[in-house]
Length: 541
Image (tube, rainbow, N blue to C red; front, side, top):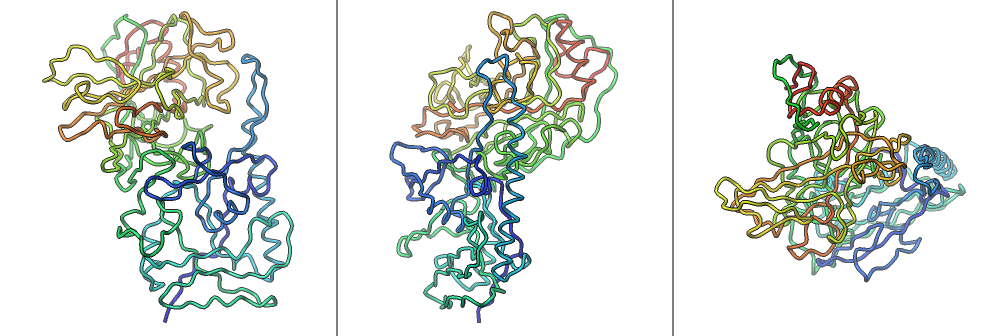
């Protein structure tokens, strides 16, 4: 006898789906193709010249079977083309509009279900995930065991609720479509038009690598548990998320004490050490409220960063992995370094060093970064080194090296340029000229600018500290750097062109008293406060 596992009876529809189905603001192009392993892939942009667009029917079918889930982007409000006049306040209301559309579509869908003779509590779970959301491997194995199928004969089921018809409720016959495996036989008789569906079909979650199952004769022998944690989108490197570092708890207190050490009068800078906090596929800047929708990231600073983070309240939320504890709850993240031989995200060595400097601007003119500022430096879409995007790599010689110089490059160095024992440093420099109006912008860049001729442009007149992140990796004797890539590298790989997509994200979360004091006592006075002094007779630890 076969027993069926029924999921909790709730309906979960994400904002990206509702923006496609119920909002006139939606504007999406979905592409599909097969990679070099024959696996069907989906993306919002074509990775190669030969691709095909999905038809509307294919989009709906893919959504219902959970093969396809990323729908975007939401159209942004038009803004002035004059940089100094730009106001992006309307951009941030788009998420509120999408939420209203989600509520309206949910009410319409529930009304349609009521007409069908069912109730809200009898709905099966229909969860639309992003293409890189982590599959629940345990749930997959549980379903395989309960249903009595082997992994080569998993049934494919579609939702009995046709979500695409969310605009006009109508009476419909619920006919779940179940693909019958060879053994055992499952009845697929249609439900009569006057009957009420009281037992929904089992919706089997997909693995993260394969969107469609190959014929039985060509099925891979790899167990489900071995592929469920592999995430790969487009031409980016595959990542085994089971090899993520364990999340760090961080500090939940202020770590500051008195000192007699005096900062020297050289420069105008301050540094802070932050340990790596955690790794995941979230990005609250680019994909708010969309779990697992981004390429793989390595986070440091604020430990609470995830897809649903409130970017307006970072200074009061979460622990910190930085020296000084919760004096700095800012969040910093970069694309992870991936060893493509093992699909392993590589953990940086030691602390990530974050600079706050006067840069090329007179230190006395620097202002503290505004509360809640967020920005992105570099270019995650870059596919070559034709344009310098303020992201670079440097291989510092180890103690046994005979090299006396270490050139900076826009790609990950390999061969004699970076030997075992060397320190490979990935650096990203943020713009330091603010427009004085916007804490963010649609592309997370236009409200900021880099200085020119040692001063800020008239469109972005307020200089803030030049923030730079330095992430270090010690090259081991067993490492082959021709196999290393950034998780955001979305282009064909030849072993010599990795790292072009280097970039970093920043969300300000300082205790305002401390960051204002650091700018005043270290940068404005042109002192070097090293990586521990506050410039006022105190130090952080």
